Each structure stands twice: as structure tokens, then as C-alpha cells.
Picture 1 (cartoon, rainbow, N blue to C red):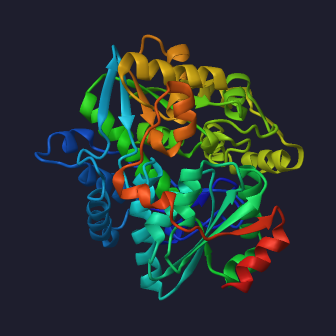
Picture 2 (picture 1 turned 180 degrees about the vertical axis):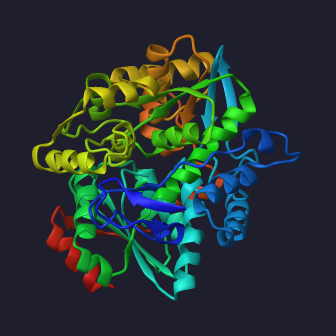
Picture 3 (picture 1 turned 90 degrees about the horizontal axis):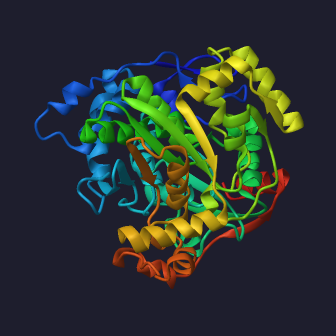
Length: 458
């Protein structure tokens, strides 16, 4: 299996290369050269098959090389053994034609654990084979950072620097990162938004000499293996419910999780539609409904992991919907970088709209949904899940729909308590972070300052 850049000017690379890569040198994102297919019937009919078996089989498709199969299987079983719920990705019915897919039973109580707990040891294995050490640089809107810290702590061949937007994530999200004692982890609060932090990461990687000298690698959803690992729970859900076709509603910020649903469909999962649920930061809702992908001002909301106005993974969908025309994507993304606006071609938009729908959910609607779910279904949901629930009610009233519950409500206790009148408690195993000392640096939104920080402490 080879991987090509969405912008077409970088050579194809291997699965091992993509494990430890960031963006392609031409600024694009890596995608598989062709789509494999997954035999759903085989895993469905395999007695005693576990979630780890399925996830390993999905990721192995993208390895394309038997030399990786054993490591993928080993690390998948080790990773998902850490989940609080042995079903790993349990489904909870809450009404006619409705299910919650609970993705928050992993080590850090968010869906990011599904990919990062598997990606981290695979990345470490790739570096070990090359006798190398990497510096992983990541930006987080809240959950990626915590999951990356938990997964990469004490990995022998990896250092991690995580950037988070100062004051724009929940206290629990921040403390899950900043209370680590692992010597290979550093946290940085950026004085700006998530988009600012993400832009800094992209700019650092764009300096190819700096990236090479410091052996930079990425663990954000720009890393293809994260997308592949997340596709597994769409497939497990399709198998478990055994419906002709399912609609999935996905709380969406950087577009990685919902693009994993697109990948699952390419692999053969019977997916009817993917609902892109956004908060007030609605660049994706506007793009999918009108064809105008235009950057706006970032608004702080009660669902901070979605407070994003530049969705990196949307480039992958643009590439697919344009017939994989890399030259066109290069022109479009360069224009977007310069002007903050991109107009989708009519045929590309039509292709996107055959599978994707989108909706913008405001703060009052989010709070009302949290309150109603607690009152009527006796379920506490976090604000991101509430956004997807609200979008489902508006965009898919009569379809068999699975709503991705992407985070435990205790990660956002203040917002949930304000809406539902009940304060969710952290699981006992995580309560120590509430009083543990924190450790992080603060930097301005400045590329030179970040580079100096990375070089000085290397």
C-alpha cells in the first residue's frame, strides 16, 4: 500500500513512512493510492470476534504488508484491553431508530483514544526499526492532547510537545495533559485559538529543514493511521445493528472523525448518510450546504473541541470529490491560505452532498438537548454529543441513526451541570488530576517563539 499527497507534488510513501509523517512536503495530506475493501461477512461470521480483532483487520488493510500484521494485531489487543467497558464501543438505544455509540470508555474518556492508543506503539515500532527518535508536535482543541499524552507517555523513541489554546479548553481537558509526570511530554499553552495553534504546527512542518533536523512527526488526525483506526467503529456498528444502511451523526471540528466514516463506506460499510454537526463555528456546515468554504472568526462555545474555523481533513474530502485532481486541490488550498475563501466546484459539491448533510447548532439548542436527554432518556451527554443529537433531530428525523457520543460528560462538568442541573463525576481512576500539580509553558502565537522553544529543549 502506497500513500500519495492530496496536492500531488510529493513522492508516494509506504505505510511505515506514513506512520511517522506529518503533512506531505508539498503541504498536502497523505491518502491511500487506492481503496481496499473489507469483508464484513467474514468478521460477522467469525465466532468470538472482538472489537480488537476488527480494528486490527481494518488497519492491516492499510498496511498492505504482512510484516506489519503481527504488530498491528498485538497492539490492537493491548490497546483495547484498557477500556472500562469490554464491548469497547457499546451501543445504547434511546428511542425509535436511535442509538448512541459510546466512544468514551478509553483511558482519557474521549473518542481520540481509539486511534492514539494504537497509533502510539505502532509509531514507536516504526522508529525502533529505523533506530530513530521522533519529536511529535501536535495541536489540540482539547481531547487529542489528552489522548496523545496518555498514549505517548514513556514511549522510548518518542518525545511529545502538545499545543493547546490558553483558556479555551475545559479544566479537565487541560489537567489530563498538564498533570503528567512523563519526562518525554511537554505541554504549551498558546495565547490564541485552536486554529492559531494548528497553523503554527503546519508552519513548523512547512519548514522542511527544521522538520528534518528535529525529526518531527504528527499525531493529529493529519496522520492517516488515525483515520484508519477510527473507521473501525463505523464498521463494528454496521455489523452490530445489521441494518440495510445507517446514518451517522458526528460532532465535527477538524473533520477527521466524520471522514473516518467516509473511509468506512469506501471499505464497504453500508452507510446511508453522514451528518456533519457543528456548533457556532460552522465553516463546514456552510461549505456542505452552500459550497462556500470560508474562514470566519472563532467563537468560544460549550463544545470547545469543535471551536475550529479551518478543518484540516476537509482537504481529503475535496481531493476525493474532485476525482483526485491533485493540481486542482493545490490551487484551491493555496488560494484558501491567501484569501480565507474557497468555492467548491458544482460537481464536487454534488458528490459531497450525496453522502454528507450538515447542520449548525447554537448554544441554546445544545443546552436544551443536554437537559432533555437527561429528563427524557435518563442519559447525561457532553456538549459535543448534544450538538450531534440536535442535528439528528433536525436533519434525520426518520432514519436509522447512530449518534457518536465522543466524550464523557465529566470532561465538561460545568456545562453539563448548568444545562441539566446534575454535575457528572469523573471515574475514580482519574480524580487525582483535579488536585495534582500542573506543568506547562505559555507562548505567544508566534512561529519564531515556538521554534526557539522546540530547539532549546530538544
